Amino acid sequence: MKEEWEIKPFGEVCEIVGGSQPPKKDFIFEPREDYIRLIQVRDYRTDKYITYIPKEKAKRFCTKTDIMIGRYGPPIFGIFEGLEGAYNVALMKAVPNEEKLNKVYFRWFLHNPDIIKFVEKTSKRAAGQDGVRKERLYAYPVPIPSLPEQKQIVAILDKAFAAIDQAKANIERNIQNAKELFQSKLNEIFSQKGKGWEEEKLKEITTKIGSGATPRGGQSSYKETGISLIRSMNVHDDGFREKKLAFIDEEQAKKLDNVTIYENDVLLNITGASVARCCIVDEKYLPARVNQHVSIIRLKENILDHKFLHYALTSQTNKELLLGIGAQGATRQAITKVQIENFSVRFPSSIKEQKSLVKSIGAIEILSNEMESILKKKLDNLEDLKKSILQKAFSGELTKNPVAV
Image 1: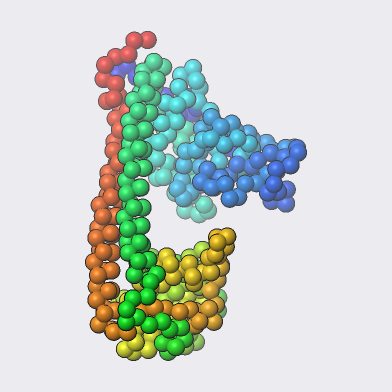
Image 2: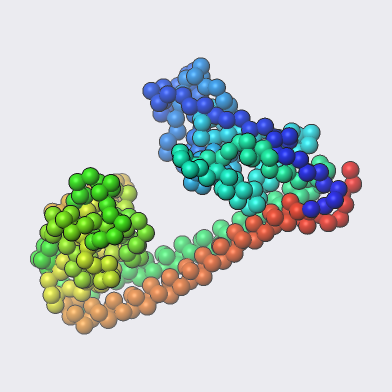
C-alpha cells in the first residue's frame, strides 16, 4: 500500500442502506399507473420476473447509477448496477462519501477479491441464512488515494477490463462454434437416410420404455448412501453427471424395481426445462432407479446400438422432432410414453456400420470437448488476470508514479 494513501474503515466512508420487503399480495407483473418496479437480485440476470408494487408501499429506491450489493447468496456480495425502482430486502445500496471516494473507483473496489473473501468468511452463521453482516463490513479497511489518482486507477481498469471482456467474448464465441461444429456433424448424419439404412418406431425395437417415481417423502427420504436414484439433473447430452445424485435404501428401491436401470439403457428426460436431454449411465453407478422425470429406453439386442441411439437423440434434428418444434417455435414441455414409442429413428441395418459411425462421431466429440476445455481454461485465466489487476489496483501497484493533486 502506498504511504500517501489514507486507510479508513468502510463505515466511515460509505453508508449501507438496506432494502424493504413489501407483501407478495401487492405484487403485479405488468406496469400500471402509481406502481413502481420492485428490484430483486434476479432482475440483474434476467427480465423474466419483472415485478411492480404500489408506490405508496415502496420505501427504498435506487437509480441506474447506484451501487447495489446482494445481501444473500449464492453468490453472496454480488455487485450490481443499471436498474431503477424500489429495491427489496435482499439488496443493499452502497452510498460512498463522494468527497472522499470516486463512485466508480469504489465500485471497482467492491469487486476486489480480498474484500469478497472477507465478506464470504464473515457471512457464515451457525443458524439461519448466510448474509452480508453490515457491522463486520463497516470495519473493513478502504484504501483512499487522492481523487485524481482514483480517476487514474478507474481509467486503467476500464481500459484493461474492456480488453479482457472483448477477449472473453471472442473465446465464448469460439466455444459456441466448437459445439455447433459437433452438432452440425450429428445433423448431417441423422437428417438423411443413407443407403442400407432403415427406419423404425422405437416401440418396435425396444423391450422397455418407461419412467419411475419419487419415493414417498420426497427429498427428505433420500439417504447418504445406497442405491442410486437418477433424476433429470443428472442426465445431460454430453454425459451422466454425478453431482446431486440421490440415494435410496433397499426397501424404497424394491418399490421401483420396474424401473431398474440396466447396462446400456438410454435415459431420456421427459419433463421440465431439461426435457429431451439424454445420456447413458456408466455401470459404476448401477444398480440404480429413475424418478418420474426420466424415462428408460431399453433396446432389443442386435438391432440398434445404444450409443448410436444416444447420438441420434442428441442431434438437433431429432430433438426438434421429438419436442414437436414447428415453424412457430412452439415446443412441448413434456414428452409422453406414447410419443417416445412412436418416435421414428433412422439407422444403418448393419450393427457394424452403426458402431463405425459411433466411433467416428466419438472422435469428433473428443476433439470438440478438448477444444472447449482449452478455451474454458483460457476464460479461467482471464478471470484470474482480472482478480490480479484488481488486487494490484488497490495496493497501489498500477499507479506507481505520484499523481498531482
